[in-house]
Length: 259
Image 1 (cartoon, one colour):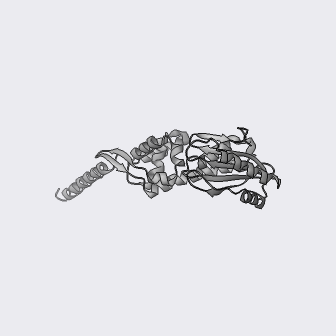
Image 2 (tube, rainbow, N blue to C red):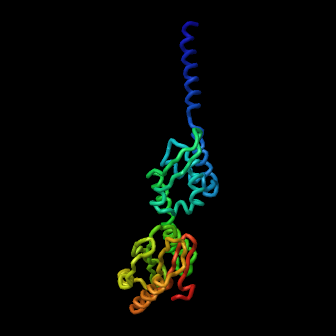
Image 3 (tube, rainbow, N blue to C red):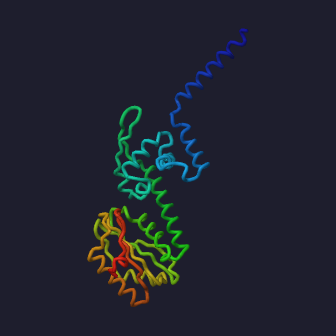
């Protein structure tokens, strides 16, 4: 009998410690594992946006509860695509009030969280770009618009981008030629044509963004397009269109009869 008591005491202590450890685990300890399993079992549509975002942010905060932050981010940016498309400078300015068991807490996105979102953006853009490379661009106009909007619609400064196409109108190269201010990016027709010749491109699609959100072409947009058209035509390079993208939509100069 005497020999059994220490064992009983030891078993009781271990059980008590196990219960204490279980109580100490955060409520979301098994939640992430369940989310991952639902994703693996049900595919990409198995989780709503906020739960996908929870899992995405886990590496940035492996010991914290990412659900309140995920919901707050979606509320602030409107939806997951807009959040993923947000420029780094916008993400650094984010201040979100998250309700916790201890009350409201103001949080900023750390670099790890911003990096996770930028990785998702990079992957999405590369997938869209690959789709363009695998088919004739002019017969995949929806994919073109999806790509340029994802790449540029939410930028805070102007960018001038060119899609260089071969004789079959397949994408050779996609390049940002110029970056500028909130309302201007300098464009030099000679440089545009020179680069087209270097890449042996037969046609171009010009693209730039309006950080104001309004994609309406300006007089200078129209004049610059005509200058590039004239310089390109002299060397047998066709300009198919000039797209202007913004948060509020897009405009096609060709569609508007402006080129």
